Image (cartoon, rainbow, N blue to C red; front, top):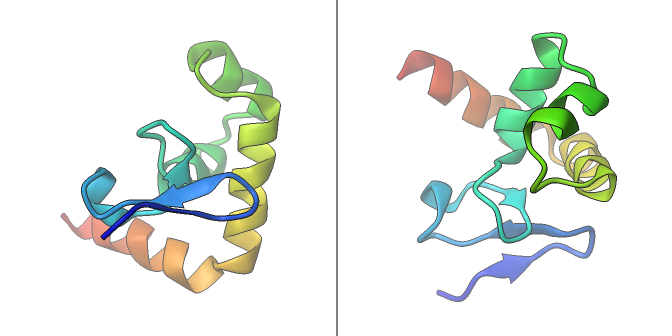
Length: 82
């Protein structure tokens, strides 16, 4: 299966990050970013510690989350249970 890219810059590739939705060409999953935000990290703090991400990447992740809440929340639950 080929990787798929969402129009907002989110990719899914079964060979990378277990096929979870992730920011273009990185291993930063949308679920992981949402978890960081829930822990209180601001966008500025995330960008400070992950220079491979851009503000546009974070906006794409937040938009994807808003459009796929159930999918991302399920991925977070599965991660917490592991």
